[in-house]
Amino acid sequence: MEYNTTRNHLIMKEYGRNIQKMIEYLLTIEDRDQRQSNAMALIELMGTLNPHLRNVEDFRHKLWDHLFLISDFKLDVESPYPIPTRETLKYKPERLEYPKKYPKLRHFGRNLEAVIEKAMHETDQEKREGFAQCIGNYMKLAYSNWHKESVHDDAVKSELAAITEGQLEYQAGSGTSYTPPPSDFHRAGSGGGGAKRSKTYQQNKYKSSNGKTSKHSNKYKNRNK
Image (cartoon, rainbow, N blue to C red; front, side):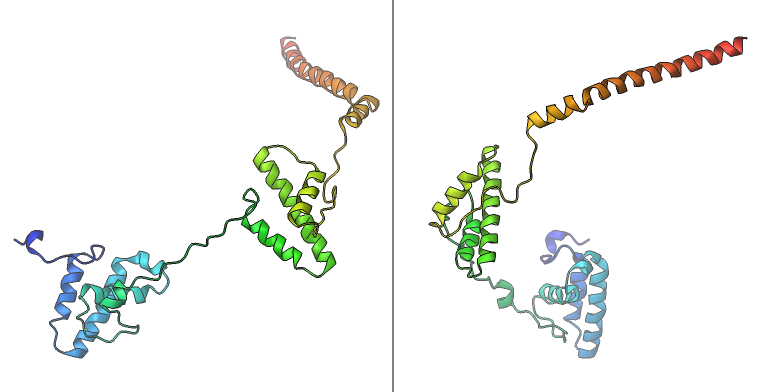
């Protein structure tokens, strides 16, 4: 009986011990054509045992890389892809530098500063005004998200002018929907008879419900007759 403690190291556990033994057998085949055909058949078997790799882009390239990795890069066969080496396996990509940018207005974020810079360099006056309106609307949205309350347009206008040193001007009151004041709502309800209609509707609804019960009671009365 063969125990795992006496066996060699299992390089890739997802393929199992049998696949590793087959690859070790490929290393002992001297005929190059036979070794190549067995390697192609082994690639198909590895793909069948791991169907989840079929959803990965270039999954056959990955299978060939795993074949050479399990063979400890000693397998001499032709591959349709570049044959990996130990150096390429251990190669570490260069470290990406984290962008060290500290925005002046952190409550608005770096993206708004980039939009403001682009708007200030815009030469078309119509696009420049459109930039100013979009920036002002975003500032109102950011303020409401942070403070959970609305902000007046004049405050946004003055702050945008201070940030851009007067180069961008937000037109107060543009792009906002009109909401009727509460006095108009009450006036429409009292003058149009809205309260009376709602009260009459509730009474009719109550009568109709009572009428249904009386209908059933009349049904049983007629049956008793």
